[in-house]
Image 1 (cartoon, rainbow, N blue to C red):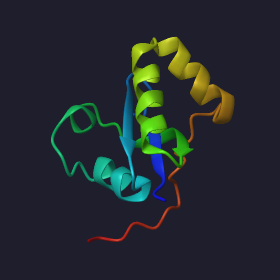
Image 2: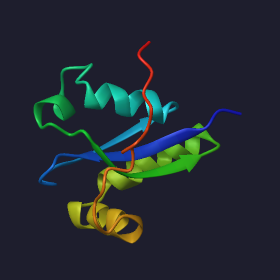
Image 3: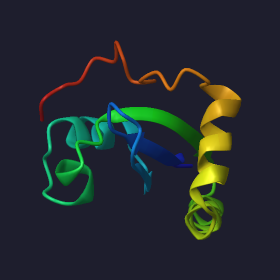
Length: 99
């Protein structure tokens, strides 16, 4: 069974929150940090992982992502604050392999 994640990336001033979904959180965070893809997160320098949830059913992860994206910023901030009140980069210290 494959694990899926929904996650939030933000920039150093926390002015934007990007919500994403992936089956490989380590690789996806690395891609955000290195601006591997040109898009929202590279444009707004979203390279801090501040929140994530783990799912054993990809359909539940997709449903949760849609629920979060339909909410407002305040609800996203509340989620982050509930587990990461200092908005620290949860990926700090992770070892990224180049592949």
